[in-house]
Image 1: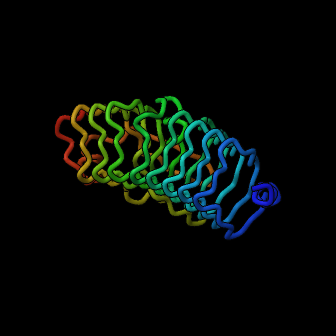
Image 2: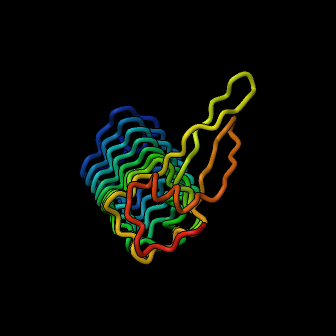
Image 3: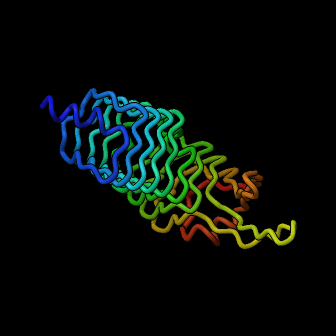
Length: 229
């Protein structure tokens, strides 16, 4: 056990390390920079993962209850079936994360909004988010197929993006694309003020998406949902 803990301590920068099924609860892993690390089924309850940077981490079925994930950066992380109840999620950034089957219904609404506030290209397929306050979250190009969003508040959320093409300083606006909501339960969901945003040279401009845009681009039946214009 001592040797294992020393290995973790000295693995602040690690490529392809495996801690699958490891007991890391309560461990101080602040600032770790890991690539392709395997943390599947690991016990990370109450662990300090603040400021970690992980690319391609496998955290499938990891127990992250009560873990400190503030200001963490996850790119391409597999968080399928992970448990995040009571986790501290302020400032976390996810890109291309797979949250399919993750247990999020018991996550505090404020912390859940932190988790999804910058979640580009994330997969939340089939996740139970019914009744959750997701006001203002950013789920651009995300997979929300079969997600339970019944009575959820998505007002002001960024669900759509408009492509740009910079040609000699002139910006040409391309087609709008929205997150895939096909098969999602949106009955009673609040979609008022859902945003379409454009990114150009690190700047973002947003405008409300029309109800027609959502009907055309979200691939979902919006019957029973509250829409804007």
